[in-house]
Amino acid sequence: MGILAQYPGKKNKQKAYQQMIQELAPRPPVLKNAFFAFFFGGLICTVGQLLINFYQRQGLSFLDSTAATAATLVFVAAFLTGLGVWDTFGRIAGAGAIVPITGFANSMVAAALEYKREGMVFGVAARLFTIAGPVIVFGTVTAWLVGLLFYLVGGGK
Image 1 (cartoon, rainbow, N blue to C red):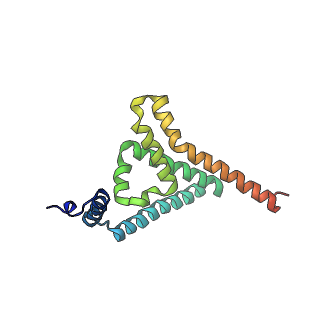
Image 2: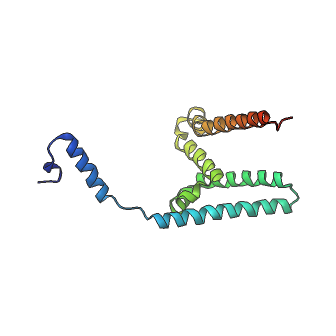
Image 3: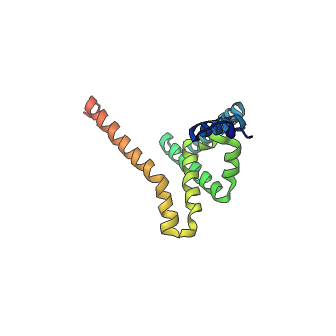
């Protein structure tokens, strides 16, 4: 007689099944995952800071060097995603691989690669904007609201 046979009724069997699944499911190594996320996320940020310093030594202003760093990090993450390297890195680094700018580049390129069989327009381009669209809309609306709030508070005299 199995564990589910002990419980009459559909709801009780579902409850017993969910309990059995929770007991048998492997526990994630939370400390190890947190360490790897912190380490690799910090490593990406350190590389970003080194790039900012490099671009400033080349004569760029701070704002220009941060823009160049962002472009470099996006390019590297997109390129490594295209080669299939970022997936392996992501399995090891966990949440550390989704430091905002590199994670965004990875998610856009991965979506485009997944649908390239459907063509350049309806596959690649449409899927790129499936990911980028909400981010662009959210960024635009947030920037507009912050600008309006700044103006209303008196900062836009």
